[in-house]
Each structure stands twice: as C-alpha cells, then as structure tokens.
Length: 189
Image 1: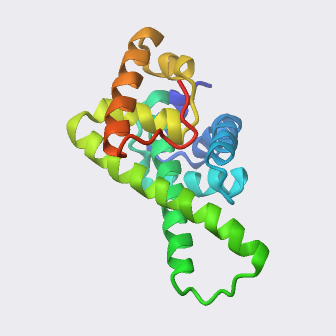
Image 2: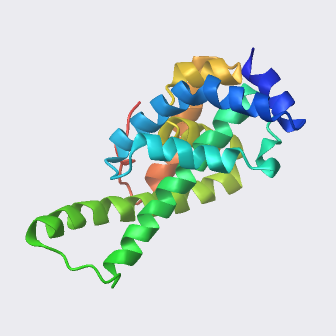
C-alpha cells in the first residue's frame, strides 16, 4: 500500500494503518536519520532520532499530512527540531548543568560546543529564510536536516532536479550571507 493511502487511513483513525505507515517508512526514516547524525557528528543515535521524530509525527494533530512529500517534509522538520533541541540542551548543560568535565571530555565538549553553536546559528538563519521563502527553507530542511539528496527531493516534490539545484544555490547563498560568510556545517552541493 502506498504511503499516501496509509496517511489517509491513519488520519481517519485507523490504528493498524498508522502501524503499517511506520513500518513502510521506517527504513527511509532510519536512512535519513543515519545520514543526519553522521553529517552533524551528533552524539545522538539514528534509531533514537527516528523514534523521537515518529513520536512527533504520530500525534493526532500531526496526522494532518497530505501525502508522501508532506510526510517527509514534516519528518525533516521534526528531525531539525530534535537536533536543535539536543544542541540547546547540551549548551545549557555546559553552562552549569552540574557535570564535571574530565580532560578527555573537555576536548569533546569543546568540539561539540562549537558544533552546537553552529546549529543554533543555522536554525536562526533558517527562520529568517522561511519568513522570506518557505519553499527554500523547506528544501534546506529536507536536504540538510532530512539528509535527502536533490534527486530524492525531486521525486518527492515532483520537480526537476535542475530547478531544485537553482533553489539550493539560492538558499545556500542566503544562508552563507546570514552566517557571516561561513559555509553550512558539512555543506554539500
């Protein structure tokens, strides 16, 4: 059964369809999460990211999804929120969360702290981009936070990869300017 059909059935209250929906998208979500965790060098596990994202997606109010494209766009947004929330928690913990750093941990905390600050700056820049062009912001979420390749996004959105490449360049230029000339963390074309 197709993802869109399962979404419609789950939205109508069919719990079995919601379960089948999770089963049918789990491998895709797991793959996206693994790419995300690897790209961000986060100390999160891909499985945890998938399950946390699913908990956000499976809420009754979240089942207002329309189709496969909308599902993966919302999944990318959920992963973005989770990664940003995780970065905020790590930063808050470093500001007196009661932990005592060992020498080894202090180096890891320093590297992770810079990454967390970059993620928060990127999140703020994405909010500004969303205010100007929601489609470009969604593209960045699917590509950067969702870990999707342009070819996958083209299939999901029924758009040409060529037009998405143009949009990707626009979004990257905007974010590059917003981040003070710094490249996106783990930036790719």
